[in-house]
Image 1 (cartoon, rainbow, N blue to C red):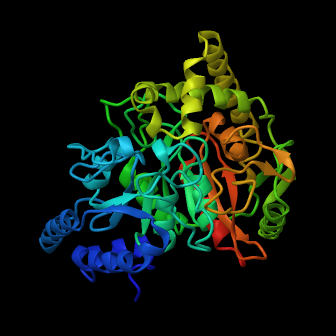
Image 2 (cartoon, rainbow, N blue to C red):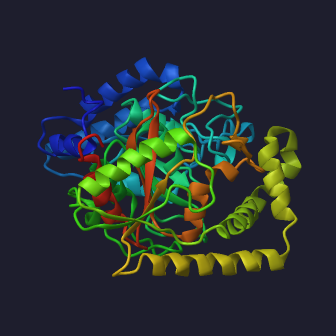
Length: 457
């Protein structure tokens, strides 16, 4: 058995039955990292001694019949935007190239409480800005399907690590598209969670944390280790970790799907349309009731641009002190945030609420259960290309405009999952994005499992 390609749910079962120890699994993972990571540059900081100590402690507990939680003994590398006690956390920035925090981010603390073994950090663009994973500290991460191409971002290091078997699953964070985009580019399942499902210190709902995995049950298992209530943090939903265990594929018969290739006005590359067209046919053969329909979302573009710029105002002190160490695209975004008026921010917040209500009504009981659309409008592109400047001849005015199939969904505040839809004729993965009802994260993962169980899916 190749432990590095064994599903996480099976690894968890083997550890609980004492067929496998945390130390044995860690040794297999570290060997895979040594063999594979130089080619993709996904894991940028490794902490083998700390991981070995944790694995030994967990094996001692298991020997006494005690298990810390659903992730007991399972290795994970944490995105380099989240603080990890005793492990370097750079945020992809030379400003923090030597920063070693003394505390864990809230979801990292939950991962450890659930029994996960943190082995190191995964690569991310500078402060997570952009859907192409590169930075001046560690360089670019490469796509496992073709190392000349990007794995997407900003959770590109996480996605590449999972796709190559260096870890069974990984955490990501998603503002514009940062879980869904790399999931699509690396052939994985990636869930943008309902805001508040995974506790975070930020008192805002635009950016969320979510799982990346090779299957929907594995993504659900990781989610069980990251969600939970924290009375000291805002926006914490009451979901219980156990709600995400033992995930099974949903029957697709009778599921009402609203389908759109472009949300009415977005350019989408022909290769993406072709793969998704085949995916639609599989859904229809499986008994889904698929109809051409979509809510109006073009007004989400301005809402997203304003609220995203307002978020990055938090980096203004760093821009003033270290401008030469911040990439130009991010600097411009911070400056736009500084130039916003209160009226602009208030209008964007009102638009945010209106769009949420519009999509909630669109996906209400008795109507469509999910909205299906492309995860990404393009196929993976060369790592030398910082961002997509045009699609089908249509210019993209900013470095995030090519992500609008995801960023518009962000503004709905509804959960969304990227599911592998198939490969292009040149062997590149394409993702199908499913947007579900508010709070319906488990149901989305059940549907994702059902789709992946289809022939050819």
